[in-house]
Amino acid sequence: MESVKPRLTLIAAMDQNHLLANSQGIPWKLPHDAAHFRSYTRGKWLLLGRKTFAEMREWFDAGHTPLVLSSSCGWEPDIGRVIASVSQALAMGKAAEVPEIVCCGGAQTYVAALPFADRMVLTLIEETYSAGRGAVYFPKWNPLEWQMQAESVLPKGDPNEPVARVITLERARK
Image 1 (cartoon, rainbow, N blue to C red):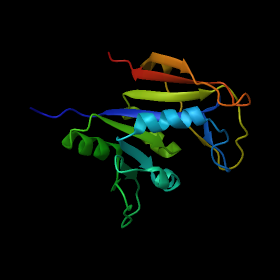
Image 2 (image 1 turned 30 degrees about the vertical axis):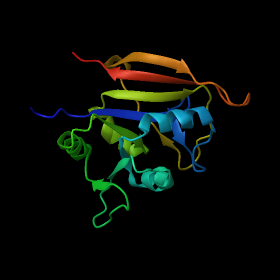
Image 3 (image 1 turned 180 degrees about the horizontal axis):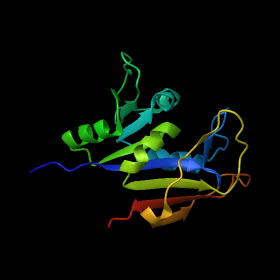
Image 4 (image 1 turned 180 degrees about the vertical axis):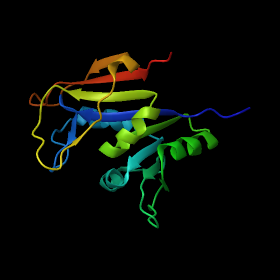
């Protein structure tokens, strides 16, 4: 029996302008979203860019398999593998019979992965943050290509936290 291509899921948190981070990093603190992110990605293969890999390095555990999208020859991460393309990540996942690969960013990795994505799990923060120099954004997507599957409001741990919703979108199939 032939193995099946893994589902490619993009997971991200963004403000109303699709801002992911500015020069200071992520401009919000949402503990419930961090817990949601950790829960969703636990034990899965993760697709990340090199900068995102470096920023998240201390967070990985034995259950994660990071696939680092990089064009740097000769660099090898201390955990996971370097890959040259999203297609290569999907082929590796298929060969290993992995059911899902989760793309965690950064911005260029989301751009590369979006055409291959089957699902998006997005935390939409109902605020607009200062972008400034070095701001990175989640790519625009065509809403006609996606169907809402689930939506929930994140609980607030602090009254000063912004309102945030988690939506799950599945690519519409023709």
